[in-house]
Length: 380
Image 1 (tube, rainbow, N blue to C red):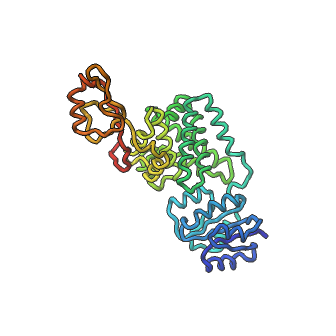
Image 2: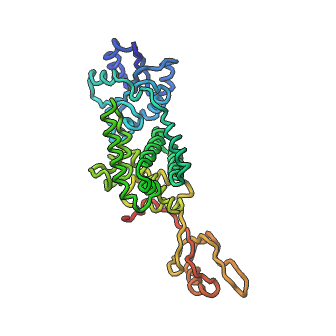
C-alpha cells in the first residue's frame, strides 16, 4: 500500500480525505509547517502528497521545500482559488498537479493514480548548459549573451521564491534553439541587431516545429517550456509574435522575465551602461511587466540608479549633476572650476556659457549624471 501525506490546516478537509482514501493508501497528516511534516514522515518518502490551501501564498514556501525534499513524490495542490499567475507558477514552474475545490473523489483519485510528472529517467538537463557554454567559446556574441543573462538571472533569484533552476534551463534551451537558425539570424537574435525583427518569425516557426514534433512523437510530451519560449519576444501589452490575444499577466511569467533579461543584454551589447539600460527599459511604455522591471532595478543595486549622458553647454540645466571635472586656464595655469559630482546652479551654467571658449575651452559636450526614475514613462 502506497503512502499518502495530507498537508492541511483545515481539520474538516483532513478528515474528509482520510475517509475517502483510507482503504487505498497508508495516510499520515500534518499541518502546513515543514518541520511538523518532517516529524510526521520521519525517514519515509511519501508516494503521494496532497497540499490543501485557500490560496497559493499560504503554502508557497512549504511547496518549494516539499519539492526539494521529496522529489520522487507526486505532489497535488488543492486550492479554493488561484490567480492565473499562481496557476502558471504551480503547473509550469514547479511542475505540480493542481485541482480546484470543490472537487470530487474521482477527480482526486485520477490525479493520485497518475505517475509523477516527468519521473522517467532523463538526460541530465545540465548537459544543455555544458553544450551551450562549450559552443559559445567559438562564438564571442553567444558567449556574452549566455553568460550575461545567466548572471543577471542569478542576481534576481533572491527576489523570487520560484524554481530558478528551471529559469536557468529555459535560458539555455532558448539560446540553444536560436543557434539552430542560419548564422546571420542567430547573430541578429543574440546581439539585438536592428534586423532581429526579421529573424523572430523564423524563431517562432522553429519553436512551433519543435512543439508539433514532440506532440506527434512522444507520449505525454510536456510542451509548456516551448510555449513559454514562444512568448519571450512578445510585449506585455500584447504586441508582437505570436499574433494572438495573450497579453499582460496571461503571458507566462518565465517569458515576461526572459523578455526583460534579453532586452537588457541587447542594450549592454550596444555599449549602454547598466543605469542607462534600465532607464531605456523603463521608458518603453507597455513593453514589460513593471513588477519584474522594479525587481531588476533592485537586483542591480547602485549601478542601476543613475546613468551618464553628454549635454552641450546650451542644453545644461540647473540641478544637473556633473560627471566629470571641468577645468579652466587662468593666467596660464590649469585650475579646477567645477568638480565631478557637483550639482550645477544657474550661476555655474551662466559662467560656462560666458567662458566656454576662452577660460574653459569647452568644445565638446559635457558629461552629466542623471538618476533613473522608475515609473516616469513616455511612449517608445
